[in-house]
Amino acid sequence: MRLVQCLDAAGARAVAATGTDGVTRLVRDAASVFALAQEAIAGAVGLAAVVERHGLGDAVDLAAIEADGRLLSPIDHPDPAHLFVTGTGLTHLGSAEGRDKMHKDLADPAKQTDSMKMFRLGVEGGRPEPGVFGVQPEWFYKGDGSILTAPGAPLASPSFALDGGEEPEIAGIYLIGPDGTPHRLGFALANEFSDHVTERQNYLYLAHSKLRACAVGPELLTGALPNDLRGSSRVRRDGAVIWEKPFLSGEANMCHSIANLEAHHFKYPLFCRPGDVHVHCFGTATLSFSDGLRLTDGDVMEIEVPDFGRPLRNPLGTADTPYRAVKAL
Image (cartoon, helix red, strand yellow):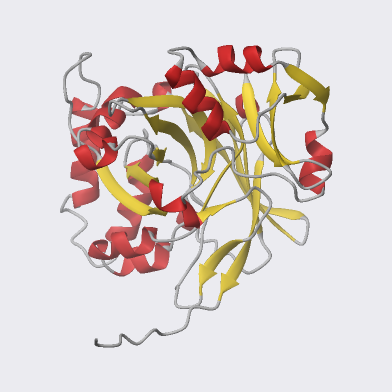
């Protein structure tokens, strides 16, 4: 089952579900996936059971909803400060190649970079036995719920940025239960939009490069993540595809297990606060930046994986970001 959050024709929030028949129908008496997940946790059942309990109503046309700009992120929080957007890097087989290229410009080619060392650690110890911590991955913070950008809306690069580029990823979506237990709602496509030029200047700028907008969706895939996910990442300029590469994910294409990435995120008590939502990106091995492409305003970033339904599309935009002087009190 896949879930979508959207606005109905009257502008009211709604949730729709796509079943095995491929038809998308409104979920009765549902205005948010967050509320449905709370109901599932309280009743100790899965999201699918809650949707079945609510029942399905009229069929909807997701293509028309997208064309009208009525798609929302498939998860949000009534208080955006209680939604974390985070991620892990160097998790995919082949992901070290692009990162290594970026960091070798001024380095001795014979010297292994920190990125390659981190990648190798993941290959050797990123798939531990159940209940055991494996090697911890690279981890970063992107922002809170205020950075989530709806499918179709511009991913705004701040005016001080040196670059804005796509990072096609899979994200896990979680809600922390009343007892502090993380509950996975499912998975969604994510564009973990980053500033690769800033990162390339110095690896210690990685944290700065990640503090950017992030798009998720349009659809939330419930249940287990397929082991071998195959799709495409592409960039369109004036309607024409100017770059495209296969996008591979799922554990068959990763050096870390999903369980290990989750364990290292939720080992911190800060991330187990009841009622909080987490959007955690699992990394990628595919970047247009690695092939020398620099995006310009209006370029459309598109991530498509058939298992996740509709593609995630967002144009690049720019946000004016003024200098803010601090006032002493």
